[in-house]
Length: 247
Image (cartoon, rainbow, N blue to C red):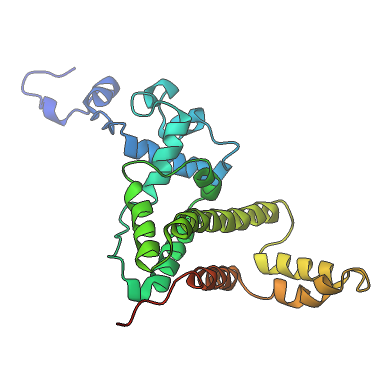
């Protein structure tokens, strides 16, 4: 007990008083951007097949119902994730004199975006990019192809073909990466050696071309394969361009 003249300020606070005085934890508002961030974290860790709205909610420490105030469904969330990949990418003006290099840059950036996160190529193939945020990218691709002098029918088909090439190539890369995860191989280089040895061991009398080309099918890295594929496509497209009148 404290008597008259005792300094109460020097007495330690009771435990319940210390708890009462502890500042309340700051609650971070739930936003669509935070939900997308959490969804990418879940996707990279679990993959497309195992990703769920419940896991995204758990990543954020909220109830699943809280997510639906910001996104209507998992499909809508996937669309927002796909759109996020295009943020910050500035589209240059079409340059007919350098159209092939512009198409290459477009494809390189597209593949790089898809490889930023696990299974994004698979998500891309399921979502047609005709949203207000993504239409400018489709418009730019068509402008470059038409500006190069390609006939309209060829330009329209080539635009779809480029998207298919980017998605398909990145999807193949992700597929092999998933397969590597289930083996005891640490790197893609190890898997390349295994594949090369498999084709080299085929009966040469039945599969002469596969055996002969096995040295070339797997000796380059994926960047080199992607670039060669682009070159093959662009040389084919260039053959459709009629020489401009010089007069």
